Image (cartoon, rainbow, N blue to C red; front, side):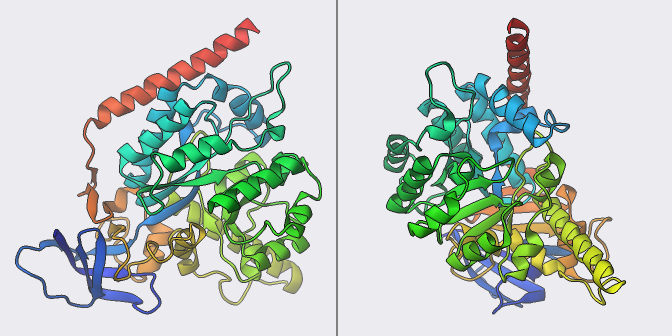
Length: 454
């Protein structure tokens, strides 16, 4: 069995029992972490990785991203949420072919690995045909990333005689096909979840159907909450009364949730995924990070849209932390006339949002999210000897407040190296990039051609 020892590194385990090791070793055998402590003796045939000047952290977990939009990077940077609905979902999304979905998902997932993400929640809601869905799954599998493929549904403007997307239940047959085929293994590298409409974007009948489907099939049901008036006012109350809201339900955004409803959701065990930068850019409102923390729960963090912003998860966590500190500081000034005596959120909290909390949201906290013996060997090595990180006084602060793509030296997923010495271990990367460029150009040309024809 393949053995790898990362020796003499600074280890941030995110495991409360192990803690942080100023100098420590991490031993991996096969796909699992088998030991984490200050010094480990190993057999002569073990691969030794010199960890001096490095920080080892758990693999990062991106809790929400629409990876199918990778080929349109930056194209929507100046759009509000309303423009995004009209120009992306009712526009560009309608000209995607399966090959566009495939290459966007593949390259987007590779970029996540490059940034230290070992688990990606791919919220795919542009899959009008099974071929589109299969193309997305194929891209994830080929990338080598650990992923939760959240199967969604497209949102075009209805043609004459067609129902509005809000009136269309999630397709049971397609979900069952995936569970019987490429995503049959519930503990596999790529697993299945549901990206449903929820009561904010669907009728009550559809919401009831989709919640029941997720519960019956024991799948996570994730949904956007926010962006204009709800399709079904009072829908959440009806779903709660029906006993359908609880663990396994994931809310994305949630900026406009009233306090009383948020209280009930927290009490019922609902998880929350915040995409801080995009929420502020497009007009969702301020992230609910602080509102959750006051209720004793933590958010998970996602990128959301590379068509708008960068795919750097550490930066997203930093934005969430900074934004909430700013809100807390402003509230303190308003109520007491001065800023707080000490920071309201320590940096370790932000690292939890993109490691242990992501694992908990996926129901995989016993498998990933921390450097714990017995867990899957998903980890990241940060080069803390780089000019922009040296010297290190507080390793957690170095990771959260200062680390960027340039410092992500190595990434391991399931015991296999996916990045070493600052380089992705991917064959034909330039060809993949060119295919992505061709896809992006064609999509823009096709939608412009449609506009001229109209």
